[in-house]
Image 1 (cartoon, rainbow, N blue to C red):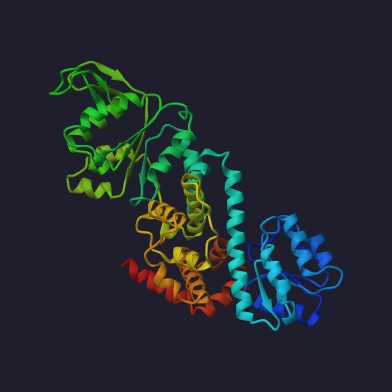
Image 2 (cartoon, helix red, strand yellow):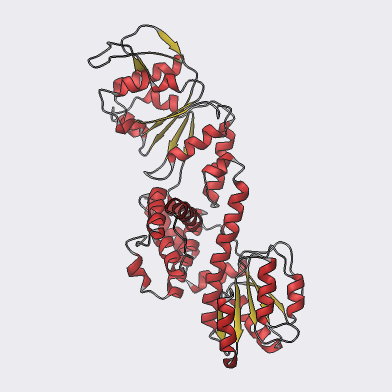
Length: 454
């Protein structure tokens, strides 16, 4: 049979010359939620499977015309990295071991355990998905926004679109997000995609500066303006002129400095401390915060007029725990970077660790994930809970992750099945089967979601 060009990422190519095995195995895989294409002739499968096949191959070893080992070698020459799972009779164990050494993903003895087959295919598809996502990321590297802001989740795709639109303007932007979520990364992406990309990007963390120094840092000072001012010095706003000024943790800025900042933004000019001479500046201001600035304004801790000046446009950066599609992709990206920096080999990600990464709460967000990837490369325990979770059976871990992903998607889309199908890439029948398997009821999920918001 032939394969359509548009293939899902849960695709399985099944090859076996025994019609009974082919039918039974194909039906089992389909009931397990995979999209299965079958061949009884390995040479035909080799001819019809495209080099861009995004799925997994499951093949018998003993077949006429071409054995499974030769088929695997030919397929992997055509599509490097393609996971091939081989099935074998008892007498073929030495051959299967040879195949594993030459690049087979796994092998099963006939009669095989269906649960073991499903588990192995799931792990192989996880690997294949990462391969395709990495290829997509490399293709995106020509785009400065995608280069900075990695990810394939719907939240990140939407955020990249917003950044592209705002980059064409000089509008002030306020970035909202938790600590470690990557607010400065978003700010740099905005700058690099703008007409100011070749001009300075000046970042200042308002929470890291001593109260008595922040005005000097922002506006500069003249010689003799205060004790210790031995020379004149330009401030951050002056240095950023022509480019972008990024004010992180803006909520930490003292109120008296907020007054001067507001005037500078309104007039597009500053005065150094100790000077009455105005200096014109041309800059775009991007601010970032992890708190609700309007609530601070109500409490008298932040100027409301400055808030409205900064929040002409707002960008909300979702926490990593709400971007599960991005976790493994980002982990591998950071691990590759760490392996290069430390000149160490990068081992394949164990399936048990992958499940643990997906279940981890990531309170430190992307920053915590980067640290975990570095520890993994150095041979250390990536996350503290990995040892506890490793004792769980892999199938149980994957089932928990799958259940959580579906439940979160149902909540996010308020129970709209079509939206959930599109986000998760699942056909209606498969989604219904998985909801039934995990005991997920749309009405109860919406009910508890409503209660949690009250």
